[in-house]
Image (cartoon, rainbow over all chains, first blue to last red; front, side, top):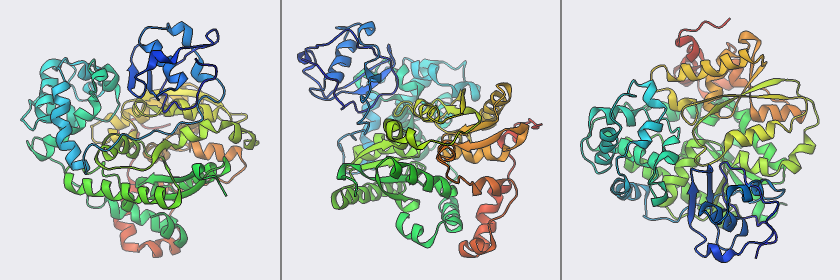
Length: 227
Length: 287
């Protein structure tokens, strides 16, 4: 039973939940707490914690057990956001290189090439790609993520990714574990390094430049301690 | 001595090194609300996000950085890495951590400060009489509600009027730079909105936006400030901005150039400081 909102909400992106009239919630309804529960419908992204009453409340709402009108505002209660650290995911591989190598095909398998991510992307307008076919463009995304050659529209699109992130919530496979922005990112990496459909001009001056700015402004003590 | 749970590493990234005052102000703000802060950044703490063309090298960079943060967590009790840069934050969350065992959590600086508003607000005693347009981007909301957090912090400042600016694509201005016209359009949209809403200040959230906006400082009687600078003003703290001054024609003092190396300064820094603003590149001539 819940009497006090807990403080273990790991992240709240947006959302307005109200909880004035509910005083007790059976947390047994959230027995599988610890999952990662998201909802486009009420625009919330919350990492649920086991036996966390607020998370349980959200989970119940997200599952339709409670109505949004019953939960609106709870996250804005005083003290509710005191623990806002994000617990990082456990390592799946020993290196990022190994993780990315496996993640591409895995994410591609989840993708249905429905085109929702492409349609949500604001960059399509900037690159004159709005009239491209969303299905074939996102099918190319799957191909790239598996290391296969993709059509020109897909290449143009992934090249222009600016990490607006609207694709993440637009993806109907999000709840199945598909991070659309990560899929685009990995697809772009394959287009650079495997299919060679994107050429990158590395900037060898980037690090020397920021080091020069550091030398211009930081004290010797700051240079020693920070860099 | 802060409690161990309040010992943090402030990971400011690589490109924030252009804005040393903003690093110092960030540290100061975290300290004022009770955190014990060690700062870390620059190439030796690179996340690797800008190195998609060299996956093995980027992987090594990520591994090295995670190892250093793990050591800070295990040896110094700094179990939280406080991020500034949205690229670093997302890369840590989405790519670095799944490929490296981590013994720390992360939190964005705006989240920590917004959660500490009860400790921060009493320090904001100096009215900041500005009408401020907040320059926002769509991205990073997948990870942190940064626009809302900064707006909440700015609303704690006495005297400050806040106007929400248009939300531009991307997670910060630098992400738009490779797409022809996109960066100029984003900067122009924010600037035009500031003028339209009779704002006297455009507030940037991230360093790369600040880098682009400061070239326009003073145009249309609109100034450019970062959110940490506005909070510092409300605390009565000097919030000078060397990068802004340099971008507008001033030069670093001779001793600083000597320390950095005159040839490196001329080759690496001066061209950036003298480039036209993206808005000018996009064809608009500011009044």
